[in-house]
Image: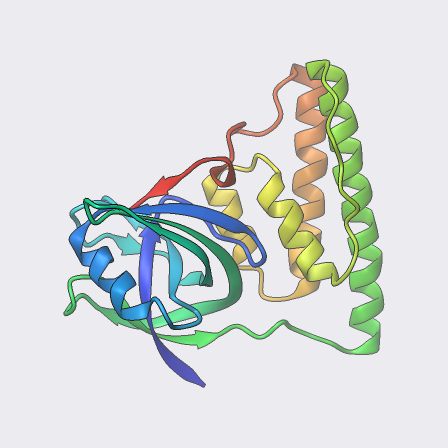
Length: 222
């Protein structure tokens, strides 16, 4: 089943469950916000492939994430600060810029195989991923001489995986690759290998990952 959804091209990957702050200042996105403020999802977030976020019609990746509005703060100059949360993933089928912003026909990406065998494999992989993430944090504490407050990661294995994706300092290309995983098993296998690689890199060099300042830690402007 396909739907029509306005899209927000950014230099950031939005994962399901991840909260992302945004600042809207371009007129075209103010218009989009005004038209969609009461809709859920309010828009979709897609990673820019080429071109600029501001004042351009950039090419975008074909897999993105629907965003639900959590909070909006409007200013006298017309700018708006938003907080959105990632929801369902989608695949872009066709798009146009007739409204000044990108509007696309999209299809929703289903969670993937839910058989008993696949479920058991997913749970085992999820346990390995959480253990690897904990080991990565242990290594980070030792190499950086700091203490990290940790939250318990429980619940749906896929959402746990996406939560860890949003917390790890992966570069943007790796984040997009994880977002595009077409099954829970594929997502968890790629995530597990990447966390273990970054832990080894951290212990060997004191540097974990290619981007220590992940996108969720700062505002992303349109």
